[in-house]
Image 1 (cartoon, one colour):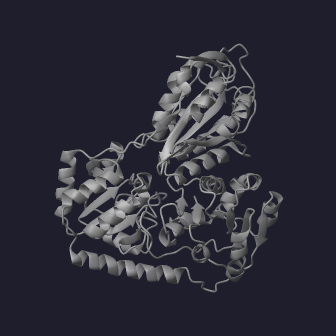
Image 2 (tube, rainbow, N blue to C red):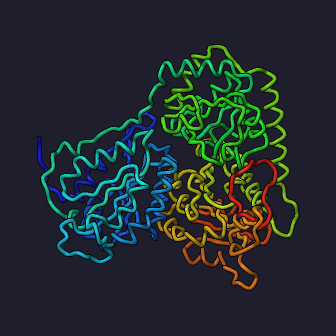
Image 3 (cartoon, rainbow, N blue to C red):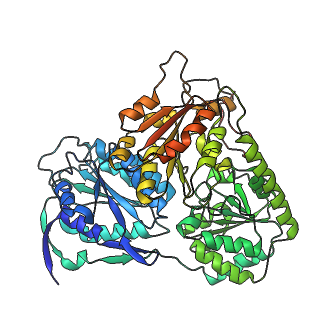
Length: 585
């Protein structure tokens, strides 16, 4: 066995570059690159090591640590968790800026490797610049903030600890049940420390995502419950996409005639016009899907974590017996469900075989088809311009949806827009709809669009973002221009936090601290975007947006269109109850 003399930083990066995965029968590097903002804590160790890696492990520079981690997460989401990125920062604020992104990845079960710099392992210079001193425990640093939001956390105090830490991190990053952020805190004096490394540690490894088969007894019980159903419904979650199970779901529902409702993460599992697709479910759901859910006697929840927006705060399907098909046993048993722990794709294949020639009753299918047809007409109506003084979000997204080129990807995250998109956007395939709503993180939108574009550079990426989120995180417009990663960004300016203003009023509160007063200055978003290198235009109406969209989509550089929208208007059709506390009277 050969030995190589390398610094700890060099060893980490060579290991990462040696991790590959097979996609469509072709091996590709599992890491698409490393995002790095250098500073005190990583510039002297990981900095030169990354420079030496060159194209074997490309380095990207962002303008905000949270944003670069969002971009890395979006890259992984777009690749259905088959590929991912790493991020490194300085110690202190550079590191803690990534905590929010780690929480987002944790909630959404998405892989990202975070390598924040850390204080001196030797403590010879304590307290160093940016060190958070815990008076009673010198082992605690700012990076301990990552512990609650990491699926794997380690602090490297000796170079040789990487021999066990890195494979352990890769296990989490590639495990479909345990997937999420891995954090390796890397003290700045350990990074440049040399050590002898076994050469086989850097041998290429081809990873394959585990796809477990269902247990025979669980399968038998699930099939029996479904076979007895008179009004079955499937809830398709993100697990369908991560199992690459879209065509399997299509085959399953075509054979067995079960209507499908989609979560935010699962939207696009079936094309919007598939005869069994009843649309979005839950608080931001379609009238069709929610009506079916209320009357269903069996619900097969496939690859969903059943959060409150999906279940209408656990009120949407009180009459149904629940089956949880999920690769994660924690999610499979939620709400008292009978578990079918398996990969979503393999679980559906096994259920098809177990159900033989069974199909749902025709009367139920007819009811589902009629409800879905009515909902399609509703979508047409609410996305058609009303000729009001200010357009609604629904009218804007309807116009953008109609203008999307084939293969286009829409990206959004927080506020009122995800609700409208979930109800109204017509997704053509699994990748075409990219909305982060598990953590509902303002500021994800533009950075997430950048990550999606880096993952699929041949597809047009359109980012829908409100003025509030834009002001929180817009720096990666400049990064997209620098990387020639063209985005089309639509900024919907409703002068504040319109979604929360509507919620505030809806629970009986007085308007307060959400919308900007008329005396507040108006932000020139187009001028701001131009200052970051984008092409930008403020349009004065829906007609102006319709006229400007083709050119924005055709531009070869990031293009931003800004339109004023109505903060008070939201689509009333569809939806379900959401448990939000009200102040006691």
